[in-house]
Image (cartoon, rainbow, N blue to C red; front, side, top):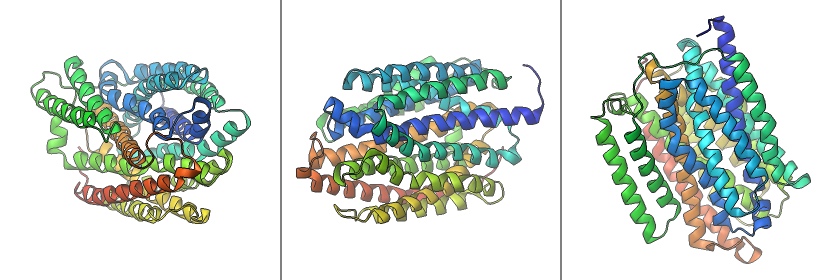
Length: 461
């Protein structure tokens, strides 16, 4: 590996991690605002529109851990760069999609590419930045996530209204080219694990099967088939855990979950947090445009309130987590989010927009307090050899949590409006489905407070 100045290496790793952390959320937030326009072009109901997000999340969550381990074995930069190239290609395909089916299929491809990037970006950062500076570095990376989330709704709304939704995907092309250029020119290492092992193909196949069956089952609720799929998926995941305990080169270090409470409960808290918050933007985007009649640009401007607060406070929370116990910061963050979600349970056809903005500000502040310290706790609780797995696990918890969040919304919408488009005739029923979703999210977040507290004091290996 080519040797370079440590400070230069740190700056390059932070730049690449921040840029890659920006692109995914920016694209996701832009697409959420564009969903009503996509639905109008292809005559898609609210439930089918949800699958544009769900398909992406299914693919991303399924392959995160395998790609994290592949990065440990064959080089994190290689997997990362391949993911950027595939993300670029999938963006072109999405921009030229001709039907609802092709959009959903290409979103699967985009999720597959994103899993390669998410699984290796954070481990590259952790391989370069010393322990005393990780909280700050992670805080900057998380701030980039929220910068993407904050600019996405406004830019996506503007582009959708002025140029059409396809230009959102075209915009991803130069961003991917920039990321690939920076990665190639500035990242000089490949950062393999110190102890290289064989890739557990059988374990990866069992894990992928279990995750796909379980998550797809949740998205098809309520139905008889959903119950069967979830049971089969959980059974496959149980068999996966048993298999990994005796595998020669396990894909997942089960002992990390069993013997490391900081790692285990921090990941559980992350899963709950994303499950309780991700679909809020999707629901409010439909509410603001379909129920309140706002144009995409106006809706995006309102939704930007949450990620702006997150972007402002995440670096501060990251720095504080180097000095203050992450458990304390993250638990308070979860509590603030819970309050914001409870406030959203009273939304109606005439709720003042300023009230919606106030709720989003609370959610943003709570998420900023939670995310950076929680990620710092996870990554700092494992050894260097497990950075790839730990980073992939962080991303997997995020994607699986998002998947469950969309599943909750899919169920509530199916129960109240079915597969119908959101029109004036069923607007009240749609709003009721939103209230139930927010109530479920608040209950989940309340339980997440205790998961966050249960991690105990962080002990670095």
